[in-house]
Image (tube, rainbow, N blue to C red; front, side, top):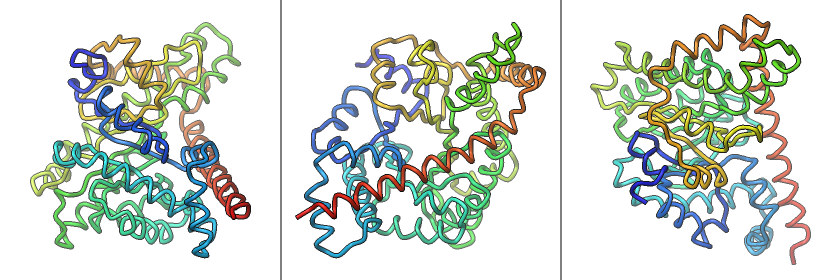
Length: 369
């Protein structure tokens, strides 16, 4: 597979992480196969993924029965199941973690979405999950809400690697990077070896087009219709520009000399929602160095089979991205309003998935012998 599209992405500096995790993926060898054949070097998970995994598989039945016998609550059982799956994935990816010097081989586990607006609750649970999983290649996922920002700083200052999730706007992304730098500064002050701390900033992509394209369709002018499916890529490209700018600042440069690792942009939600788009659209158009693209398996396999990686499609495209964003404003679409709504909706969706997961496990515990 040395000349494959996924190999081309890897050679460009894109780390491919799988946006899925389940017990079945571990026990069937599916994850190992994707690592061996499609250059997968990391895994992400979220409440929606775990809800689907537990509801869609009978493989958790024995575990759930044992957890019930131990007298655990549904929520305690859910965390036990997630921790076990994440530990398995961390162990499987440990060789990649070592090979890459800690850059990849990462597995992400998210705090409860019900803590999205609870700073202290997020910090406490992040530390607890870090201790429970007890794997150096773990990343704790914390949402980029206003309450999440100080939690990110505090958790990183304790030497814990963090995947910041649910980023939609450039303004919030700038705050996320400042939270990271502040956390690294705190770690330095606390005597933590900052070279062991890694972070990614998960910038959500396809959901932006899903929100904006219907607005453009409703406006209906030639100018508006011509911008369909352009907003998400433009937004992400400008996020990458912001990444390069902020990581070149005096503050970042000083921290880098002390051992800070860059907080790489991670392109999340890269499966297309519009069937008229190529399945690889948000992979090919956002290919550039120092990034992670976390893909659903369907998108990963399409990338491998369809080919079409066209080199770096981010650097050198910043001016055209600004033109797209200005064009959206010109037809009356407020990017700020759209991204604020997406953050609120994103938290709400994860809470719904979390509650569904708790219900599924609770019912399974009730029905277990």
